[in-house]
Image (spheres, each protein chain N blue to C red):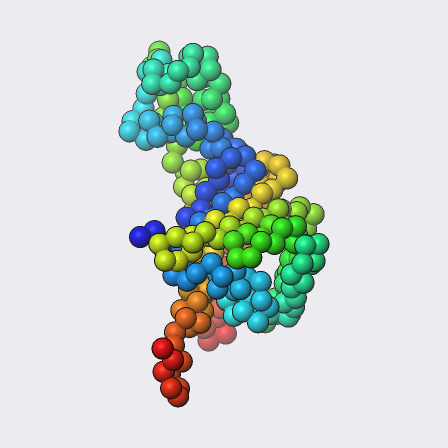
Amino acid sequence: MTPAELDATFAALADPTRRAILARLAKGDCAVAELAEPFAMSQPAISKHLKVLERAGLVSRSKQAQTRPVHAEAAPLEAATRWLEQYRLSLEKKYARLDALLDAMQRPRRKGEKRQ
Amino acid sequence: MMPKTLQIGTPNDTDIVATRFFKAPPSLVFDCHTKPELVRLWQSGPDGWEWTICEIDLRVGGAYHYRWRNGDGVEIGFRGTYDVIEPPTKIVHSETFEGGNDTTVNTLLLEAKDGGTLMTYTMRTPSKAVRDAMIASGMAGGMEIGYGRLDRYLAAQTGG
């Protein structure tokens, strides 16, 4: 995945409606009319969101059936999630070190008299 | 009890937000972010990187500068200035990667909660394009570090 492709994925995901569409599609392919139902949006407005998702490679549309059902593509989403997870893990490693430091700073001294 | 591991999100077009809970009061967490001798103990770079510069001038308008070097002599670092300092709950500072053009404005909030501290760290980028590019290049950087480890592993396996 190129940085440009990843940009497109993150841009597409930066919208709550588009995330909700993907969540719905994760359960199975769906026609546009059916997709528009739970949203307070017209079919053309939903189609606009679908175009953004399609450009990012996050969804594809079947050319066979007349309803042209929308299908969620897993690969770009996985790449984007992998990056965030990798970033999260590297930060988490750093903060685990901070945990250890904070713990050491709050531990009573072992040597000499115990302070109470 | 709050979840202890780091949560990370992109709540809007320009921000990356990390939240985490620490079992220590905000004053200690604040010190660990602002005293060089403490920062050095935990904000080390990736494995194999050593500190070369860790300077903090904790005043509004004051600067900080962090830099690390790896075994190959490659140096990475970032610097910025403090815009808001409200011990022990809030710091706002800029952050620019050395050699990079983009500056983020980062807000560290430390809130006393459940006998510890809830940290909310927001990195605000100048635009969505910059945020997305930063995420993409971050991925490339992360992969590079991963490949560096793979190289060492392979070298060890082949005795090279």
